[in-house]
Amino acid sequence: MLSKRYPRTVTFPNGNPFDRDTFRKVIPLSILFTAMIATNNLCLKYVGVAFYYVGRSLTTVFNVLLTYVLLGQKTSTKASLCCVLIVAGFWIGVDQESLTESFSLIGTIFGVLGSLSLSLYSIYTKRTLQHVNQEVWLLSYYNNVYSAVLFIPLMIINGEVQQVLNYKHLAEPWFWGVMTIGGVCGFAIGFVTTLQIKVTSPLTHNISGTAKACAQTIIATSWYQETKSFLWWTSNVVVLLGSAFYTRVKQVEMDQTHREQMNSQKV
Image 1 (cartoon, helix red, strand yellow):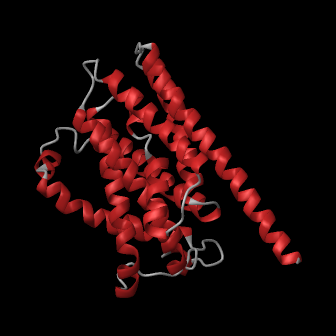
Image 2: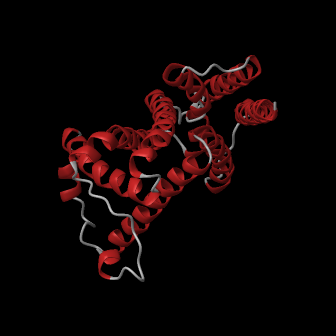
């Protein structure tokens, strides 16, 4: 609305989320977007922030599997071995967390589902951007409109509408201030995620997300003054090393493919 009223000051791509053709093309991505947010929140509801990293560490593995299933692209033996290393780190982490009182099986399952939904979301974002002329702002706009509607039946099914209405601080200014800050951060995450996938690839986004989660784990353990076992930290290191090795393997493979293409063009 501002871009139409003040076109010299504010620019925004034209688009209508209620257009039937747009809805048909973008709604699959918005469903994955909703699933990704829901599973992330549910995982954090049941597990600690520190274990969240391990619980969500299978994104790269799912990315490899889905790339083969959906795109028919095979992965090299070296890259597959890196995925095995990541799975081993995940297994050690779950085993060590199960020895503590904070372990939650349902939270771990939601973490795995979160990894799956994030991987699917990354792949479908690359596909869906072409339907909105590579406009990141427009796709973020559509996703937020559709997911806002998709969450309503989920809230009703889980009986959360009444909980919201009965919340004693619902009318407090500080509550809406915190909610606004959370909303802005949430939108920023979605926008930057889409932008990163656009200019790089779904794989790059998943790898940087793993590095972010690793830093998040270290901050969380310090913030909450948690004491973890040696094997627990080993699982984090194994996952990080597996992801780093995978990144390096894929980088070398992509460079080799690029050189081969350049040589073939010269010939």
